[in-house]
Length: 317
Image (spheres, rainbow, N blue to C red):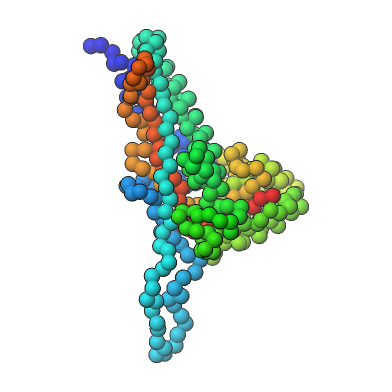
């Protein structure tokens, strides 16, 4: 029986590989790792947008009051102004290409295995880096096709004109994230700035559980802890990430973090929603017309969503 064509072999092998592709992409990033562990990465079925039910800082209808005895109530008769934020689908694709001459070069069994492993490892690395960088996107990259990342959900100036999740952040003040504004941050001030934004983002037991720093801020905070000789065990350290602790939060350095920024993230308010069969899944091979090569796509479709921006914040200088 003739051996399978190289393209067929790569597709079959890549689909086996793709069962761990998503875990490898998410497991190597601090924020995605946290979302995955909390069950905040969801597969959703269709729809023109990704809807996310909102959490308000207070009840907008004020449909409650303290009472005694026979006091009467006036239940609200109008519905809430807003009930959900809407996020648009974003798509990412990577391709393994196979030329006619490569099929000849890799006709032998062991050659095919080596070829497939090398191409899939390369593709995984490229897509992993693309997603990691997009976590800090403001959603405008690649002509607005990139993920709406932390710079979209947690903005430096949440009072500036613009919409997030289809909601006007100027009109609806409850929809704004917290921010320090442009402040001076150095070794003597960083803890005070962190204290302020952390408390601003806290509501009862809701707290930022993950702080993502660029190199400058991480080094400053690390230096403060070294001087005070205060270190604590971190869940992120157990997951393989170098991390520090601040109050109830893990502090992690991310090389993709926006320069001179620190994002205080409440991951209970954020999800990564994905389309079925588009979580780095391998599609069918396509033969390119008027050429001598095939391509095999690896496909992702989804976006980040947030239901309570006011529980997240950013410090920057």
